Amino acid sequence: MALNVVLLNPLLFCLEIFIIFIGNGACVEVTVPNDPVMQQIGSAMEVPCHYKTSVDKNFMLEWRFAPGSTSPDLGKQILYFTNNVLYKPGSQSERLSLLHDPPTLGDASIRLENVRASDAGTYICEVNNPPDFYGTSSGLIHFIVLIPPSTPVCKGTTSVAVGSDASLTCSSSEGVPAPVYSWTHLDSKITLPLSNMVQNEQTGSLLLTNVSLEFSGTYQCVASNEYGHQSCELSLHVTGIAGAGAIAGAVIGVLLALLLFGAIVIYAIHHRKQKMNKKPQSEYSMNEIREDATAPGISESSLQRRDSKSERLLESVPSRPGSASTTKSQLNHFLV
Ligand SMILES: *[C@@H]1O[C@H](CO)[C@@H](O)[C@H](O)[C@H]1NC(C)=O
Image 1 (spheres, rainbow, N blue to C red):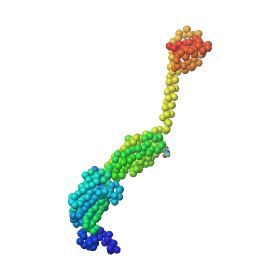
Image 2: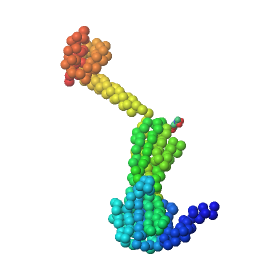
Image 3: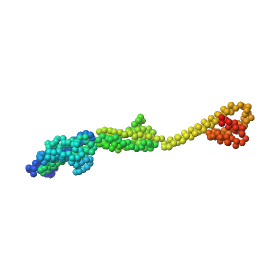
Image 4: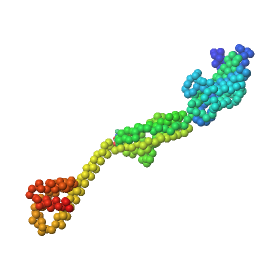
């Protein structure tokens, strides 16, 4: 038990090794933060790494980087210091520097300027101090790049019938921590029934059920995290009962047709009466009774042809038996 405790404690273990291998110098002990390091995109970040060892000419510091969730074992070298020379292989080199250069006084921390999303991942700090028997020690640091939400994309139903459901979605492609989404109905003084609006803050979905006409309008989605917020909008149009528009159109069309027909009839009758009133009573007194008797029949058939060409009316006149004089007078009225 006592031995286990000793072996599990790195410092004591180191001391023990030192005692066993007297003359091999001190052990290397690297200290890094346990918690992830976080920094906003565009800012400079510092990744701390401290060590304890007696630095001699074989001292070597190495930093490796495993992007994203790549295994730390696959980390690529981004910086190393050996023989008093600093090397910075890797794409981050221009933005990468040591906090203390040369890093020989126990501080091996690095600084990275203008942090990008691609800088997130695991950083490995490793100190090598041969010929120490246990001369290598390393520490892992997780780095999180904090990113404000990108402008979300609003999608979904844009037109829906009363009583139906509408489904809207909102999503930002970027954002760390994951953005929270919030939908609101703009330009509405009426508060919509909340029971008919179900939204999911994590996924950004909004489900509107059994919509009424008040649900029409613009919906805005705001995606936000601690570092910023962005929004998008979508217009929803709630229509009346399906086909109502078409039915209304047809009804109006028929009414207009009837109205037009009625106007023609009224005009024709009125016109005819005027003509008849102007006639000198003596001239047509003989025909008066006859004309009155035949008038309804004539007016009916001839009025229908009022809107067609008057020639046709002419043709039809002689075929009407026993009313030559009357129809002639009728004709005259129309042809004036
Ligand atoms: C839908 O809404 C109307 C009035 O807005 C209500 O009368 C009806 O019961 C609702 N239907 C359902 C299935 O909730």
